[in-house]
Amino acid sequence: MAGETLRRLGALEWLKLSAGSHPDRGHLQVPYVGWRFAEPSGEKLQTIEDAVRTTPTQVDWRVDTSRRNWLLAPARILGNGANPAASPAFDERVEAATRDQGFCAQALSDLDAIMRTLGELTAVQEDPHGD
Image (cartoon, rainbow, N blue to C red; front, side, top):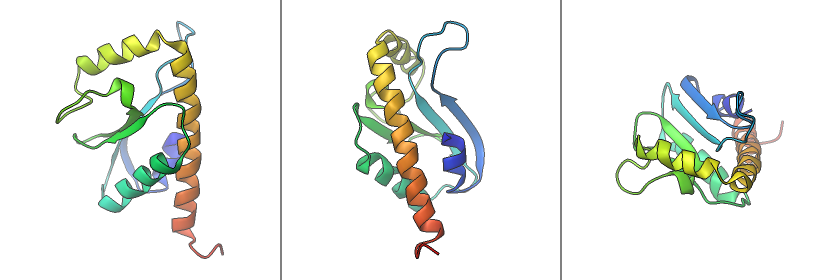
C-alpha cells in the first residue's frame, strides 16, 4: 500500500519498505518506508508531513529528507543531527527496537493509518471538487 500511495504523489525511482513479519524469523519488523521521487518537491513533502501530523498515532513519526532518499520512520529509530538515518547507528537502533515487539505492532498499525491518510490527501489533490 505504501508504494502505491506514494506513487500518487509522483513517479518513484526507488522504494524500500520494512513492515510486517520477518520472512525468515517470523517476528515483527520495525516498519519504515524509504523512497526517492523522480522529481521531489516541497509540495510533495508538505503533503506527506500533513499526513503524519494529522494521523493519530501510538508512536512518534518523522519524515527525514536529509539525504537523497526520503524516509518515513518512527522517531525512535532516527538519530539526531544532520543525518538522522545514518548507518550503522540506524541499523543498531532498528535492531534494538525490533526486540520491543509491542512497539513494532503499534508502529505497524500507525504506518497503515498514515498511508490511509496520505491516500485521502492525494485523492483530494487529484480531484479537489470530488468529481
